[in-house]
Length: 160
Image (cartoon, rainbow, N blue to C red; front, side, top):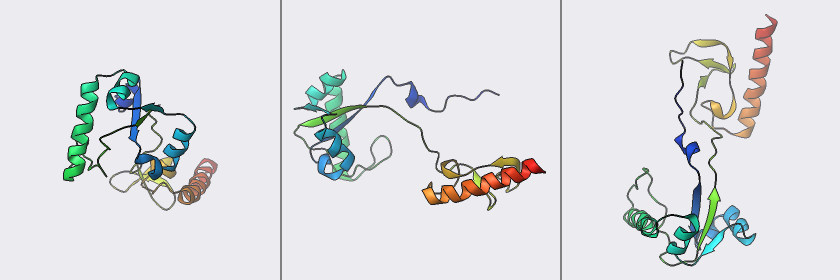
């Protein structure tokens, strides 16, 4: 069986986060990293484009499209309605980011014994799951509880 690569984002050489000055007070992690000098400060979007190595006109058009959707309250190309428009004037803060796939919320279904279930509801023999690979919310305490249950059930299955 061949499994096709389902995560083309991992093939990207680089990705960048660009924020405006309004984002800094709104987001503690961004605020901290800007203060620590982990973001490049660009006076304009053209400067940000030069820093990341992309075409300035394309970056400016991307931001203009995003702002149009934000102002109209409509979905942008990725199916999201932007919270707010990006400020028209800089400075902008740029950081190279890396992609990470660390959760699969909405994954497999399990029963109260942490046994993985087929779509029919039947139990998949000797397969237990917990945490973010399951239907659970991904909450820490829920993962710990079902982790313990999964471990106990797996131990019982081995002992049989």
